[in-house]
Length: 248
Ligand code: PTJ
Image 1 (tube, rainbow, N blue to C red):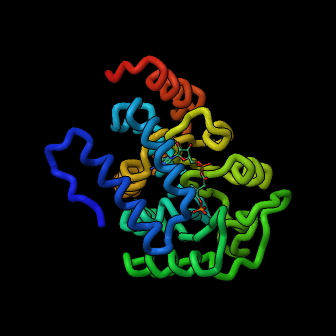
Image 2 (tube, rainbow, N blue to C red):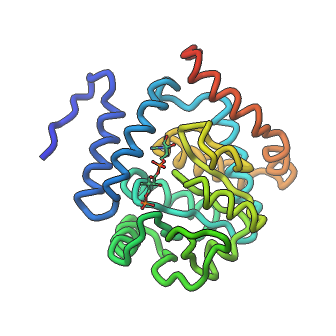
């Protein structure tokens, strides 16, 4: 049982997000460690002002352009992402033609199936990951288990709350990685082509909105969104915002 969060509470959005993770654990979608990950994320988000900073907005536009340009884009989904933004994930897949694949650090067949069912209940037509018939080379964790025609074959992969080892292994495979993580110092945003330092609950719907807008633009406009994005500058801007606490 959880207490209703009043709208006027100054941190109501953050508390509602926390409750979604709790409900995800209760529903068998989210691992208990996902609660700890959420707490870490909340601390960074608080210091970012719980908003999408301008450099993250640019990253989200570049992410959308990468997904649209890709031949085989894949959205990797873990237990936190499934609990927090199922509608956003489905909308992003629809807007970009990306495949959705469940890929877990703490993998069990039950949790993969529960997440796939949850995404289907939110409108996903096809969800990969239940039959992981390939491996990411050089990775010991359960996250190495992937679909041969999903993450293994992808040219662009969007990964929320990535662990650094898999981020590096995907990079070794030559894939373009879009990583959403509120900690700019994490290894995964550090190796990503597009580090999105923003909360998943804002980032995923925002990338989908950019994709819908960019789909109507020219290929040259989409290329420009990719070329103009500076990953080093984005990481630096996020770190500075967090360290100085200067919100505007
Ligand atoms: O569902 P599974 O089994 O794949 O497990 C996933 C977790 C999240 C448990 C696993 O990947 C994990 O332990 O992650 P970490 O190492 O705790 O990393 C969590 C990272 O995600 C931290 O850098 C947080 O700042 C960041 N984070 C947490 N919540 C959010 C977030 N980033 C963006 N949006 C969030 N809502």
